[in-house]
Image (cartoon, rainbow, N blue to C red; front, side, top):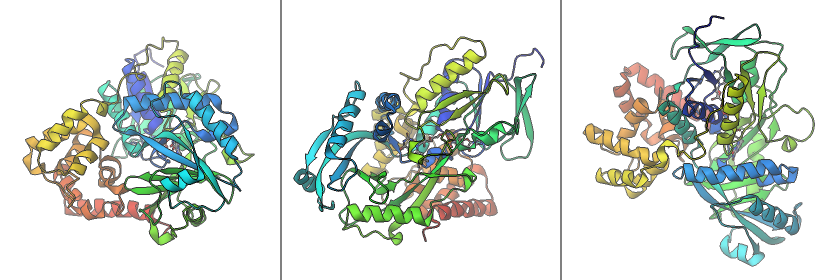
Length: 532
Ligand SMILES: Cc1cc2nc3c(=O)[nH]c(=O)nc-3n(C[C@H](O)[C@H](O)[C@H](O)COP(=O)(O)OP(=O)(O)OC[C@H]3O[C@@H](n4cnc5c(N)ncnc54)[C@H](O)[C@@H]3O)c2cc1C
């Protein structure tokens, strides 16, 4: 290895929530950082969760007290650091005569949860009588109902945007962030990381940059990235698959979220009001295939429908009611034996000392705890290199959209084309950064128009996504920037219009635009499949 300065002090592989959080933290500490993402930012597991920022009540059953404590502390921080994205959520746990968890057990769990949320910014739990629950949620199955626990956690409607804000924050702090750039090889010589090879965006051209520190944050792909160093490295990942279905408002639908014990197997699952629809999940099944191929199976969908219909008998949900379904692979540590639910949800920051100095992998990690994981990973990685860790800024520094929200509201109102719910929609997606979208629209006045009848989606958002939010293709724009792809009709009504604006901005010719629409169609169809 030459003695020249490396091109980057740190290269992060993977632009999911963990890689994005690590890149931001490292860049804020003044390190030179390159982040490589093989697909779009946030397109891996980070897009396919239950979208909760929560302490993980269930982890109490597995005595993961430290994890619950850490998660509740991070929940409080994220509510402060990203208030536009992370909102308070009320949940009910109904308790039945036949429930495996008795009223006393649930109550004790609630007390512990409250005690562990020191300095919390959500209300304490309440125990509800049977009548109180029925009054609040008349659609609930009343047979054998004893009462309920009511408590608060937080919800992130668009986790994709949390990833993106970390990417943007990393770039603002000086990091080089690149999507559609797969890492294809990590070079090690004399037991030390020397460089990393990757493919440039949109080409098969291989590029090499020197670095002495690679943080492998490839989520469920971690083992595949390690295999580019040495095929003999043991497997660390033991991913489990989790699926969700999304349905519209149904007969007897609850007004708040429910956390319910499934009759079939005693596992708790969620029914959550989400994005004007209901998000129902999840499952937990060991998964050995390519994480890119994971889809919700018919059996999982049946299970989620049956359990929902049992607790809300008026629902009578069938497969035809499903808007879309999705599945993701939890990047959990490998445990071949025992139930999936018992696999720890704690993250592991693994130094591969025997393979190479300067190689670190992230195993596990939740959306909720990404910030703390990033802090620990950067501390450790810098120490491995013999440097001083520096001060972590992310405990108190708001994410980019967290400031200037009221000013943004005024600027959006002044455009005089968005409906009230349109203004709320933009603030809930971009926070204070919506001011910049309003500014763009004012400078290019043909972009001051809405694309939908409800007046909620602004033409300027499409151009903003391409110019300032790293969107490369139509699917990025629809599913991970404007978030219209996650609405009840998958945003089909306005996709053509979005494609037309994007085509003008990106100079796509007609056949390129059609190709983009076809790829979006395939992406949407996959979310529908295997449902219809
Ligand atoms: C069903 C389910 C429900 C969940 N619910 C919750 C919840 O409610 N709350 C919560 O806090 N957590 C939840 N989680 C956990 C959480 O979503 C994940 O643990 C977290 O998103 C993992 O993020 P990550 O960055 O490690 O992985 P990912 O998001 O998968 O990111 C890894 C990235 O690495 C990229 N990559 C892979 N190989 C390469 C390469 N060679 N070069 C460059 N890039 C590469 C991938 O494209 C991917 O984008 C849930 C998970 C699942 C599956």
